[in-house]
Length: 281
Image (tube, rainbow, N blue to C red; front, side, top):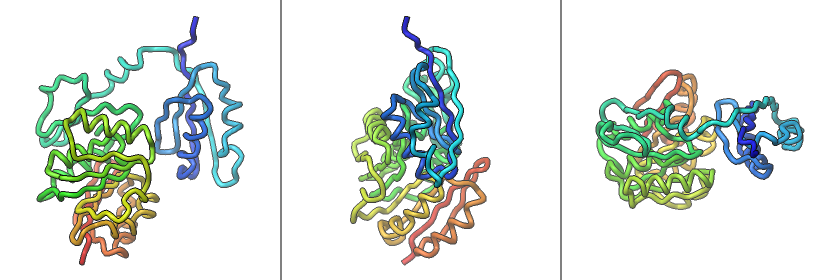
């Protein structure tokens, strides 16, 4: 009889970036088919008969002096994962202005602007504080710029809200190919026609200009992209940032000011933070 149990590897990486992306790529070639990014690293899933010790001894983070790698594995008994996921996925309400639902939810539960998201393995269901804050920040804008860049788009939920709020052109970029596919699927699910979902990094913006850039990524990536964001923004363009802690706000505001970006509003939810900045001149 087929063994339907699952091996779960919980891996802590110091530093996390860029090693988590490297590790996911390597594990994908070793039979792992599902991944969850955590604050400290990655959780990876494979068939229960996978030899965890052999796998972890073969990945580059285990032999490199540039990263500290700690891991533990456990076997998760077979269960109806879809049912478990559905039981844990509750509607997300952003005040009374917006709702993020899953396809199996009763659509009458929606309040305000409603987006339906099937997350697959992508980030951005709205349950995380940063996605919640960025959704609120979009609705706080006096008007929606016509051209929008969504970096680290994940499920595409922020791109979808941007189109619903009036954007004519949205470029949704994510470094994971499954996220780019998932964002495109969710755009279609929500009858959006102005979102282009692509797999890649900051190079994908080329010489295009935007009235709004949304970037819900970690602090180090935001800093490495800051010059590109400033260059790609129109005069008086808006930059919405999240993906970092409240303790990082002062550092990011100071860093962004070097590129003519001025903070005009801050957001906080639990220990997480967001910032709205405007390009001056």
